[in-house]
Length: 257
Image 1 (cartoon, rainbow, N blue to C red):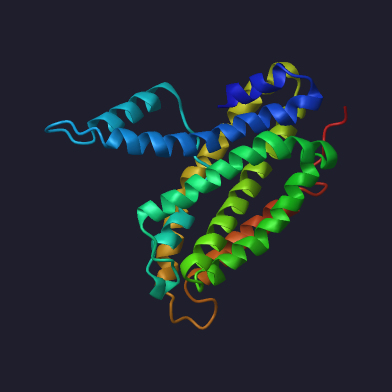
Image 2 (cartoon, rainbow, N blue to C red; image 1 turned 90 degrees about the vertical axis):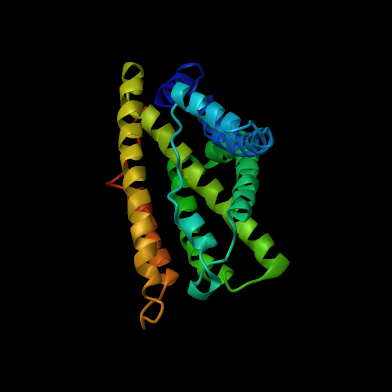
């Protein structure tokens, strides 16, 4: 992944780096759309004795060739599939997959068309800062989304999921742009490698920590202060607020050209 990001910056001029990196990010959205459809199609091919062998074989082969960096910690899926009595949505795995597929399609469209224009106007630092600020009230709204039902829930949840994932990957893309501009050409591969290694580490830690946090929050349904999932979204907002703070000087300073 980091070699691709470094190569994307090497093959275009600086004014087109945002477009090049947004295309790399949009590949994730493409995978969500195509992968979901292809997996469902291959699962219909029944092989005697070994059902679902074909999709598992293809996925294993694909995983052996490339490494996919996942950017979601499993909070959304855990929350969406939890029972409504503990603040979840009571969604099935299929429902969650549908929501993520719609989000992936919207992410592909935004990253390949709108993000480069926005980045050229605002710059990567301001884009990441503003989108981080927008993410805070959006995360807060998730608790109240669970109070909806029917078609209203489906529409609002898909809109919130789409917006959240667009914000997250756009912030990532902005940081990748800053990272590649912060070092000389011969250091970009190493810089991207170190960044992706650290990001993968924190994603692994985030996955385990997110699951433990959600499990702990489920036991606090009767708490007086921020019961249940309200505590989860508070902690996520605190982390988001710290990340926004780090986009200001003296924590983040753009390299002088």
